[in-house]
Image (cartoon, rainbow, N blue to C red; front, side):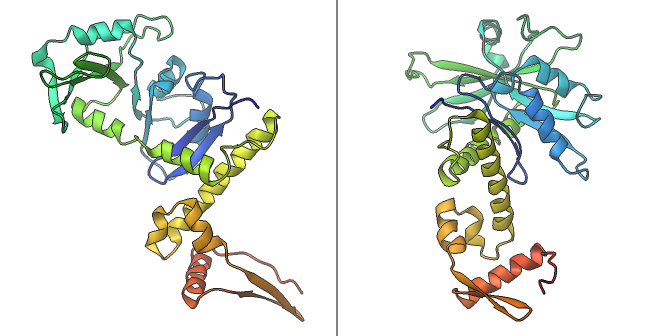
Length: 291
């Protein structure tokens, strides 16, 4: 069976999947991410007033960046979207960071092994064809990881370079910290989709069937996130899918019909039943009489 590499957009504050795009394994994440991004912003409720976007280097794509820069963008909110995206460190960008003097690097963190985490604004204008040239250059922030004297990275160097591109104007350290907050969020979604909801093993050799399987898994994930948020037991807020199965879902019951009344008899503790009633209060069920 062919591998696959889906693209998923997540609403960070709510932990919900807003959009997904099923792809074959030979399609990289950097291939046309704009459509999935547009779908994600379109899925947000109209009550949202501030928009922001964070992405890794797979989102370092000129069409997407142009769309984010344009406040009158098509298929998106007609206002400013703040963003920070990991920039691919090709030769030109790395050379630019190496030209920055040591005094210009600002240290914001010292790791346990003495590695310095530093940043600096870059005087950089893209020259690569795929990046495009703009009348108003984007802001590039360089990141340098500098080993303590006498220590080296695994590749034999004493420094590593990374960069982000952004339209935010705060100090570089603040922008970098905000961008780093995304670390592990989408990976947790992938873990729960693949290992908890069966999205890691496709049921068919047909592309459409597998795409539907992923979409169902994403919808199920969102429903479970809503259940977690409203379930009275706070220990369930961060529980993995396996624990949720045993603690909430694997409860037996029997439906009994007596004349025009239908009753559900549940084999569970009084506390669990109260928790279930709390869910009904949070998510009212609109039902019709069965008689």
